[in-house]
Image (cartoon, rainbow, N blue to C red; front, side, top):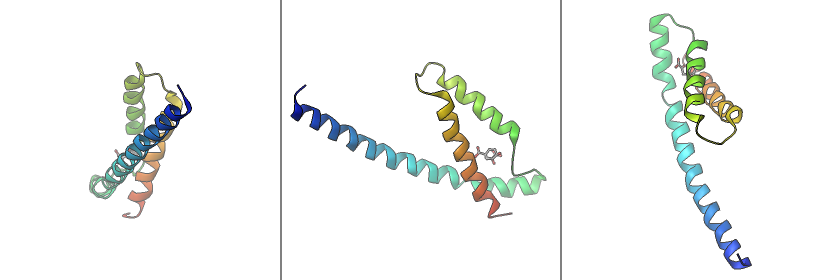
Amino acid sequence: MNKQQAEQLLKDSRDKIDILDKQILDLIVERTSLAQDIITSKKALGMDLFDAQREEAIHKKLKSMLDEINIDENLVLEIFDLLATISKNEQKKYL
Ligand SMILES: O=C(O)C(=O)C[C@]1(C(=O)O)C=C[C@@H](O)C=C1
């Protein structure tokens, strides 16, 4: 690969990352927007905001999906734990 090809490949890759980052952000916003309905339901059902069983089930599901995928499982789980934290912080606004 020559220098020009390498520069083009880097640019193309970064352009794709920019598109994916936008999609990821949109999905985070969409996931977080469910918080109000979730906490409204939980209040009506007398449930706590934190649901350890549900978070454990999400971990289990993710681990199984990551079985065939060669990326760091613990780091991916950390990302999803952060998503749950964002949701919990959002839910707290409606307590
Ligand atoms: O499913 C719920 O009960 C939620 O509140 C959502 C969610 C999540 O973001 O995945 C957040 C907090 C709970 O502890 C469990 C899961």
